[in-house]
Length: 330
Image (cartoon, rainbow, N blue to C red; front, side, top):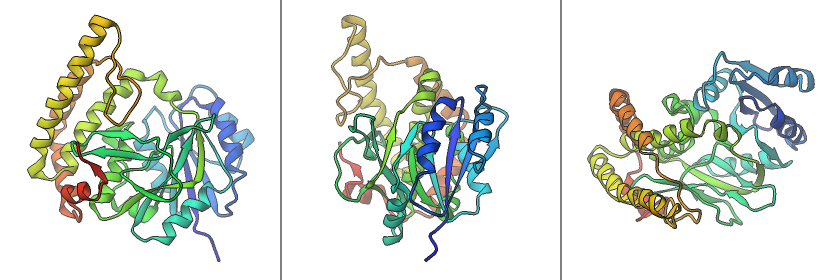
């Protein structure tokens, strides 16, 4: 039986040193029907020359500037004719059956739209077993051990599989996001349409993590906060938006203030980013918060238009997602 064709899409920005391990592992995969597309965000480290010389079968799409994560993935998705899209970070090392295990999961359950590999660190500890979200729309990364396929709120774009026709139906990633949380937004919108996301623990990918993020730390922090606000406006029902935003700013505004005073007085804090995480929170950057609110106001017409589109075809309510434990109670 002919296997569904998979397009593995990798976004690259000055990642030449990472690509060799990633691509070497990818071409040892035990799956006979896939192609590799690399979208390059105008790298200056000779990434293109390296790929062309060493991996001639790779399809290269060159952009004229750094477009982040969302737009380059959409560009590749529009070009490919494959049945499935597999978004993969360039700072990963894949295992031989990582594609086949996700294909098997998604083919066995028509409700499943999106799969995530179990992401491990180099020491075999868990980097991510999926993203979850609380009822205020605050997202966090789970590092819980998993032994079987189970539902998650959203899959991480470090290794995510989705059927192309569903990706196209949802309009792909939101390009206004640039980078961070575009995968969460996609997962949220798929749940709204009645599709689920799952973690597939037999699909294992090693994730070095955060190379580009470390270079653009403040810019990524800005996109992260404004994207979280944007998702609340676009993906909650109209009657819930104001309530959820007020609750969010009240709860997390007080928490961020406490963290700021901890750093001011003690030089550190014992407060975690959310109650689900163990690592202590970083010092708040109120300039980024203010900049994010200004962005929301400037782009409110776009967000309102997207909100109408998202909710027009809604099949599952926020209340139902909470009852299903897909969104977690406070």
